[in-house]
Length: 355
Image 1: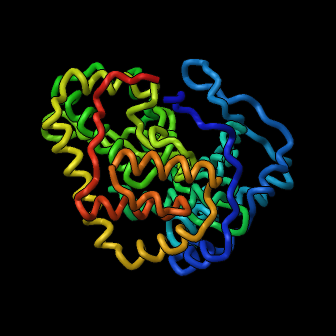
Image 2 (image 1 turned 60 degrees about the horizontal axis):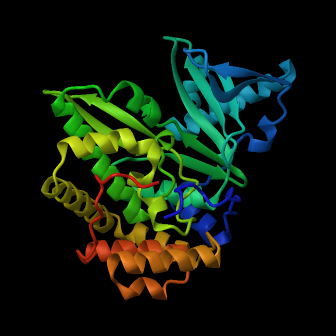
């Protein structure tokens, strides 16, 4: 198998009229007071370092005094749209503390830190270029995962709320040396996360593309892995690209699972997650069907990648239905239909990675 990296930099896929109509019907589209391109008018930028003095690949940007007044007001209104459905009563005690820009990644995001002057508490949100792959990924996350996500679009601008958690790579550096009980829970959550990604064909879940949310429990802690990068939703042709287990960056948690998990337990957690996804599909059936109808007709990848993925999925599942698929959306729907029919094939998660 080839190394599990993207074949080449993915281009942004436009939001075509059927997807935009879906987003409007489901309250995802709204008029924004400022567009992504407006934020590119910054005057200067300085490298942002973390507490250890390491380059974060983000830059803090600064605007002229004239532009900052406009940007500050617009950012507060966007935050109100995300958090209070546009109720402007919250604006008086909010201000923009910092705006950071990242040139790494397809959507080149701005990260906005909003601070509450009454108590110095702060929150973040992101402003990015629109990309249909990412939007389908966000919608599938909201419908099929245990996580809710909030986002808004207006023309070429995408607004996303911040997903709280420890970046996966930092989590593996500092949080795996734990009690056996918690290590087992971490391995269990990775099994479920791996299953969620493969079922809905979300790719490139290397450790820095998801976060880990830790919730203290009566005994030990509960762990939730949450995707934060949806650029590779149903784009690549390699089946292994949609299985986090095959990324070397995830080897530390794979090794943890190999220590503590046996095949019967792995199968149990896979079945649990599939059952939960099936319940979510049925609970949101009308919206799910509407999304699938739009996604199946959309152009999200190249014919070569679609052909490769349908052949690899057909071989993996030993099911010929995949060979009839002509789009990435059809492959996603067929994968989920196989899940609903209880015909989804297991994968051996805790094996020695070969990449």
